[in-house]
Amino acid sequence: MPNDIWLAIGLMAVGSYVSRASGYWLMGFVTLTPRVRNWLGAIPMAVVGAVLGPAALAAGIPECVGFVTAFVVMRRTGNDLFGMAAALVAVAGLRFLL
Amino acid sequence: MNPPPFTRAGFVAGARFMVVPSFGTFFYGIGVGILAAQVGLSLAALLGMSAVVYAGAAQMVALQTWADPVPVVAVALIAFAVNTRYILLGAALRPWFSGLSPLRAYGSLFVMGDGNWLLSIKEYESGRNDAAVLLGSGVVNYAFWFAGSWAGYAVGRQLGDPRHFAIDFLLTAFFVVNAVAIWKGKRDLAPLLVAGIAAAVSQKLLGGPWFIIIGAVAGSLTGLVRRPSHAE
Picture 1 (cartoon, chains in turn yellow, green):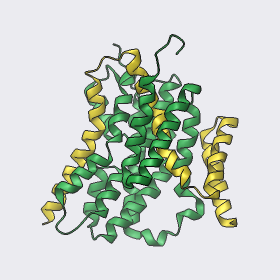
Picture 2 (cartoon, one colour):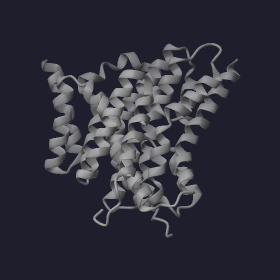
Picture 3 (cartoon, chains in turn orange, green):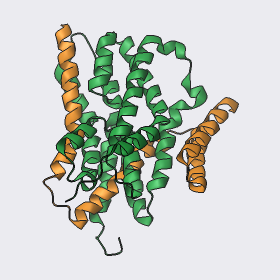
Picture 4 (tube, chains in turn brown, cyan):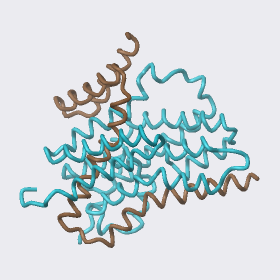
């Protein structure tokens, strides 16, 4: 029975690595035309949208302020660490106060 | 085609960039460790899982379906299915990594996660194309993931509520600041909005972790539809 656990974990590892490697591998067979590059270039912002969309919907007041804080501080300073720190301070502070 | 640089300096830079965001990863790992303890997994199995799977959402979903005897095929399929978004992430690396040796490319892909991928893409789009950034950032993130899993399993409940310090918001904030960094203009609006709406809708309708891949594919297709122009 313990063998089943290690088999399961091993297969999970294979499944995870296949998902990580297959996209890169498959694109090796595709000619990188301008249209294909446009598609690939849209992926980062799409991933951001897919991750943040539901998070934004689920956000309470502290988290909404956190979003805005991270955005504004990053825009103003260009410093990602400041942006993250400011957002955490805002969220933690508002959670404490509200 | 000439391969991109892949240097120790790039590795170190990637590693340093990832230290702060990895606290969020550590927190996430704690959650997985706590869940593993709850379902009765041994510490060795949990550490082994975090070491070879290294995928938070997949581990979470798999552990939620854990039973005795373990449903081997189900959890293996879960690990692949939940991680399907990585197919897109890997594809997006092709223009950059083209020409890199298979060892460097596929080795780096082992430690690719959402966070260090986005960070690396940001570097690439800012003109810094040292491909070792992905590996360096991945190794740091990996270490924090492993440590967090262990900490969660061993002492999770006693670590206090991380929500007090908003650590649970760290990865979200990380995504926001990196989104600002990679923003190139109006053409980024379509993928962002389409992905956000598609993800939100699919999360409401389907639940589970599918919303990321659905949203990301939907958003990326806006890039396909856009006519390539010389102004790009």
